[in-house]
Image 1: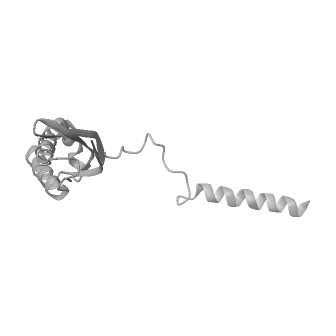
Image 2 (image 1 turned 90 degrees about the horizontal axis):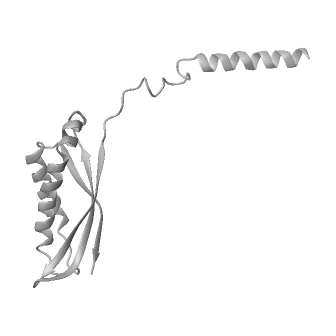
Length: 139
């Protein structure tokens, strides 16, 4: 019985040391922590028709996400997001207009470069970057 009491007391002391140690102590509550800045914003799908000889030849749908490169500009980015979306939609429509059918593919490097230029004009140089998540071509 004496050995059992000693083992229980040792376990109690070790657990008290473990939980009171600053290294292993529980972190502060979520209310005490600062909210982290938004890094990615999903814009949802953008769709555009491929028109050739006054007929719709197909549809291209692109899923775009915005990466915020400057965390201090996150609130400004979110407030100007509708203007960025409009600028990116214009770029997207211009690149879709170059296609003659769904068998042709978008020049993604050129389109992303044009989208970056448009967002640099709206928000400022190097604040955000477009990320293309998915492209779907359909007839």
